Length: 238
Image 1 (cartoon, rainbow, N blue to C red):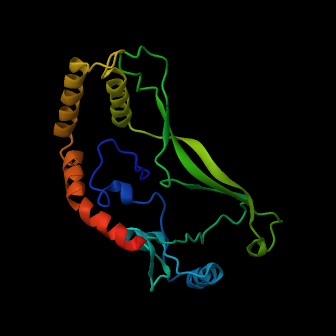
Image 2 (image 1 turned 135 degrees about the horizontal axis):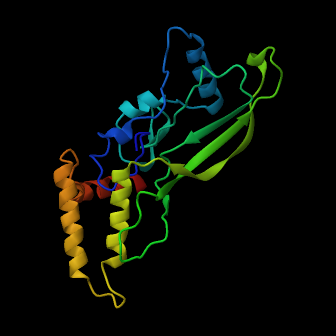
Image 3 (image 1 turned 30 degrees about the vertical axis):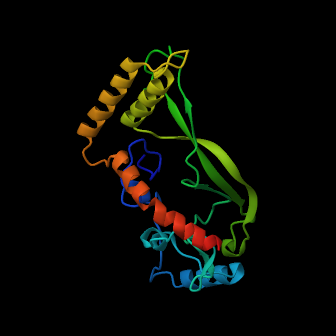
């Protein structure tokens, strides 16, 4: 969705599409707030490692994860990266703050009105729930000297959140579910009529959205690079 979701049935090339954008403004280093750099340094001192802003992470190309091998510059395992998000414009009267972190999990749940499995689901009224990580903080105190009030962690953990999905995205998800439910009969025999419908539907989507990359092409490219990836992983284990 427009919030930067990675949920895509027909995705663009990983790392090059809208799913790489963040749904919040990364303040980065601002000349009007000279305290940001010092805050970042204090956090890094506490954590004992180099931390990157979201804008820096988005621009950086990570190597393949290699257990047992370390990047001397970052003091991290090769392929790992640690980041920090700095909020420097919180509401002065705010007492509670809830942070939602999306993109850590691609698990989803669908809520679809009752329908005949032999028919396409009512995607107009279907809802898609995404596994989202929540962190809640509370800041107690009065209206005076708010900058000195401490933040206390109240709760954290995974929750299912109803995410906004465009109608055409819900339609695609409903069609995919319909094809999967009916591609074979009760005895496991292939339903050729459904297979033909699925291929025709997929081809129509491809023609309508030329900017999307064929996943089959991506898969072929991955299989071509797979031997090199396996060799690098084996090298890391040694």
